[in-house]
Length: 134
Image 1 (cartoon, rainbow, N blue to C red):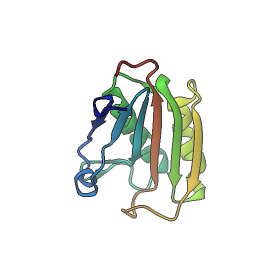
Image 2: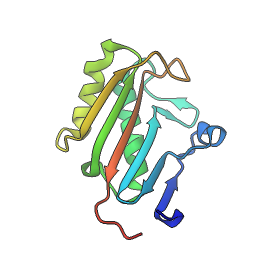
Image 3: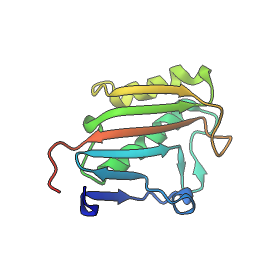
Image 4: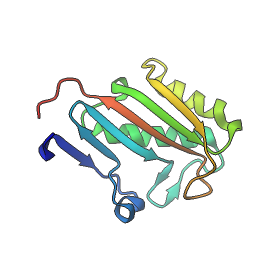
């Protein structure tokens, strides 16, 4: 795959520069969105509320694939990382509201924590672009 076939999108997260990553990368017919939280700039939305954090994080991830002309119907995989098992229902509800009609494959894991202890949820998505000109 040539470098022209790969396109990267930044979101402005302060960690993108210091860690050296992109929010989303399109390569061939796939668009991958890396770990996305409810942070927008320096502001954490939904502090203490896993449902709200999941909605904000997924919305930010969907904004990243929108840069490639894609919407929720293009999402084929989601991953949800939570810090507490008690939040499974709330995060699942947010996922169902955004992707219930799409039904991507999904993974949900409970992890020990994130870079900022106020973050309760981090998500990833993968979207399919179909036939793409390289």
